[in-house]
Length: 551
Image 1 (cartoon, rainbow, N blue to C red):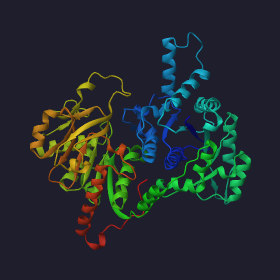
Image 2: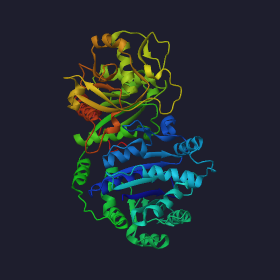
Image 3: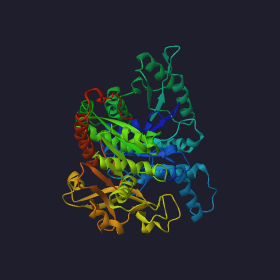
Image 4: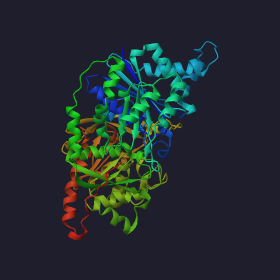
């Protein structure tokens, strides 16, 4: 029978339950166990697909077209396993299933209640991840213990242990141990209160993971152990780290995976060599490179989480330290904007929706094209690169996307045919993995090293193939198409170090030890461009390496 680990959180949100769960998943995988992961989210939205990025951060897309929580990105990057839409369940989707069952008459007229019907549906969502290829299922419960929204989830996982056997379930609780400046002390009381709240719901944690700014003393660990009724070895300290990929090693040193294996009665040796090599490579990545991210949600960095991690992965490969320069798309106009972009070594134009900041993104694409700055456009980024080229090179004045100007005389980007009758917003875009055939001899084909590739998508608008011939004649090559040749999936400028756009979201498939090819090539080109850029500057104005790194 598969083993189950449930990760809950207390005291405050944003403590890193997702990273804790991801790190544990990696540690168990390094013990030879087959791991899958899941996020239970307490909000009533059916999925995050219609939520504002300022509310939720990025929407992570799975191969099967699930619009999911950003924590699934962490899961995939750490355990290096593709997940599915089944790995994210929200209160909204759970109630939707329960109400659909009631409408079908599945409950035979019985009164539908939170217990047992909602809790049973939650348990069903956990069970459906179980198959013959899985040894351990790690489930993160979103929200914070004490929130009314997560009570059904807590009741479900409490029942779960009784149903599958105590040796098959482990509860991990992530809390905060704050440092109080005036007293000069770390305080365990919030952790004690959080565990008390969890126990009031019938769950005794087996492991407590304590977030802190500074290491916990042995005496404080003993206090938490005594007050919360857990083994002293099961009080795990998660100190702040400079890069998240250190966490599995730190947790192993603290004994997290060993304690959990004891609780679950699993005997599996661990091999940390590969991950140690990765962390060593990260620590050796010191060559500075400045990448401008031109977006409309730059005030919330989590809106571009996978893009930033993909840049970091590419940096690890090249031994480069990525400094992300966050640039509000609406600010990219005029001479001052050009001067600011002049200090960049590369540019990323990420995906998004809506007209705000579009002209700024178009100007960024133009600047990169004219000044030979390496540039990668993602989804909407490819679309604005196409618009820019059509306007300024092909000569199609007022070319645009019909998303932003329905009356444009030159709709070089247009609504996909199969989207024209769609009225509901949630889960109705072109979503998930699609194949593309790459044109031999192109930068894109060289980067991938394969003639046919698969990438994940999330969009409604596409390159208008009615303009393809005119655009290609002017020098913008359509370097990858759908297998039926109907959809343009990649574009690139022939006489440019790296000016590449993709309709896909390649950031979802990058891994710390295996960077995505497009990001890898972008950073490679950016490093070369930086050498040339700095060589042309007066010595006194050469920008010094920044000590800051991308969040």
